[in-house]
Length: 80
Image (cartoon, rainbow, N blue to C red; front, side, top):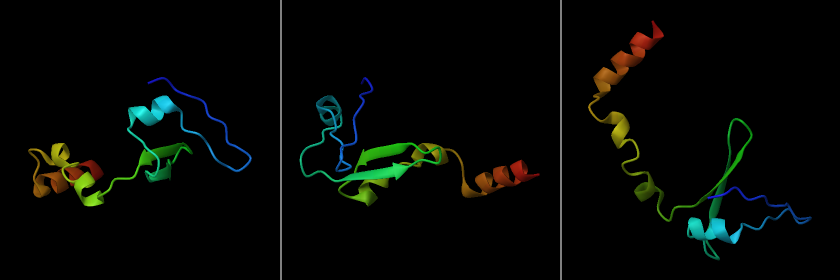
């Protein structure tokens, strides 16, 4: 995907280029969420229909092979 430049209109609106809409399967009526990163970047993403289903399993690889006790022990070691 190539970066595309858009212009903010006098009504504070932007047009999402066709290539970008097709790439993320956006269609008319889809809800979007805008997030501002700590560095000041705007992040635009498609709102999930169900946040619970969307978040399910996201931390699976993080916790793989790591129990809560081991994780807390690891954090305590980092603090010392």
